[in-house]
Image (cartoon, rainbow, N blue to C red; front, top):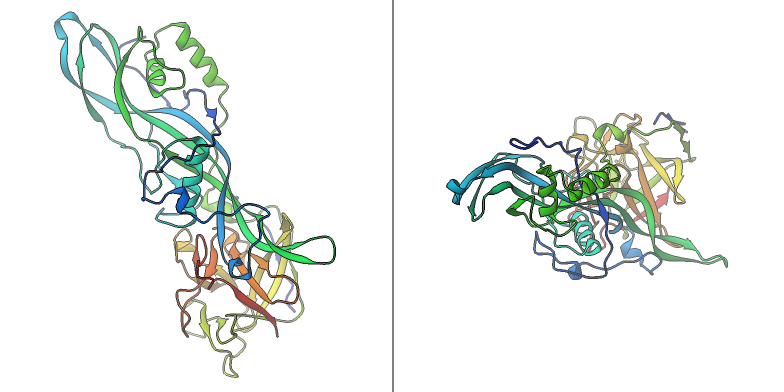
Length: 413
């Protein structure tokens, strides 16, 4: 038996603007369910799951998003202070400069196309009561020309901006729950996986003067503040900005290293992980066969490459981390590092080290059943495969496999 210990991640004239000078961020929660911009997927199209709802063994390899927090901040992406005199009224084109670039993101993903990330952004838009971007995009990082018809002289702020929506999400997974009377049931539970997201609403552009009365909390009010008009409005906004909560932190790839140090307790013996019909099993590659873990039949020629030792780490929300060590190669099951944020990234075997890419959560069926669903700790993605066939690589999917093929059996050898 192998015992493993792991050490665990922005006067008048030209206006200067920094990201730090943000307006007050208003936490908003609504019951409205607007249409959501982006991929064409709407919140109503998503399968709904709530904490405590019943699930089935076919859901063990699936995952759903729920929103823990949503904060809305009017944000100026482009700005220019501009004097207009009686002799320069009429249409003018003003070159604004970039102030802030906003990129849509969810957790660790390199792209947002479908699945869990779209569901999270959809629910974030519903929570904030806003139409938000639901696919990967960002605001313009270069200067922008704005053409405006000036009817009155004055000092104007030419701007483009949006409402930036940030917050945190959690993951719902199907797992066995002790009902307290000696029986168990499968229910959707809050899993250890969580992260942060960023998105934004439709861009708007315009011009505003110090004399204009504009709505509080609007993008136009934010632009008016940048004019530094010296009014009560501007002073109030600056004071509120000083009390704005800190921005939501995003995880850096280096944070995959687990901390603090934690010991792993390895169970005696070995396990096979297979399809429910037990015809194909998770099998590590042999010598000179690459790194990808594949589905293969278990035979006398498998050379123990289909057997895994399970080593348990700390628990979060009652769900323990697991490390899977191959019996034959003595290497660890992991998500491929170079494509860890990608949908469909393969499972591989690599040298064991302190790395959350090598840690997983196992969700179990009720006692008497060996069915399980398996989730990577770092990416939050569920493990599954494209089709039931020998030689198919095991892969990660943000929402799991909706056909139920992310459910496996865990068999003691």
